[in-house]
Image 1 (spheres, helix red, strand yellow):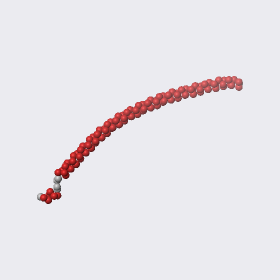
Image 2 (cartoon, helix red, strand yellow; image 1 turned 45 degrees about the vertical axis):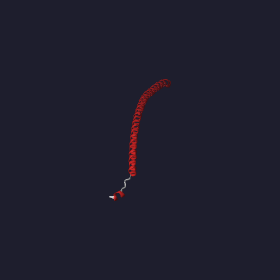
Image 3 (cartoon, rainbow, N blue to C red; image 1 turned 120 degrees about the horizontal axis):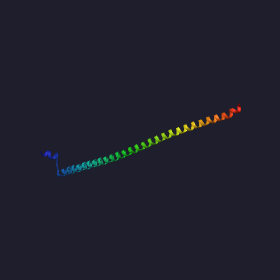
Image 4 (cartoon, rainbow, N blue to C red; image 1 turned 135 degrees about the vertical axis):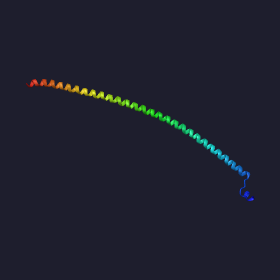
Length: 113
């Protein structure tokens, strides 16, 4: 029985050292757990902020798309009006040209007779 004591001496100082080591490791573990929880909370808040920002940007994209669509529609309508006006001007000029040709022929023809 004296051999066991020689191989495994449990002095009060050793027990105290283990006790301190255990307590400091528990405290360290608690600190790390709290830091992780705090990090999780911060990350959750950041995720919420980014989701809000994403919604805001999507809303801006939709507004800009609507503005673009409205501008394209207005431009298409304006182009149709311009083309119609242009076609009417060409028709008017063709008619005027034809009338002037007819008048000119009327002036020239009698002098040939």
